[in-house]
Image (tube, helix red, strand yellow):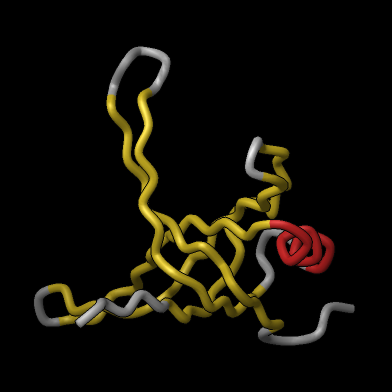
Length: 110
């Protein structure tokens, strides 16, 4: 049986959205912070997970037109791992969410 790769998350944009032109087409990159509480010893403390996101083509361009750093967003997508070699020859690896759909979340901007 095949695996399932589906991610749904809601959080605040931490950087970007920034549109980049690549050989594969335009890609919009941004980050999301997802706030939660975790137990540390006997008390619950604030915690944030920071997730890198990419959104391809016109859907990403549209996202960049509507959202800015600090705004709430909901995204649906898949986990994607990229591997490359940096300028010094070190192997690098990054896991991000490839956004397939996005939604407005929170209060309407004034």
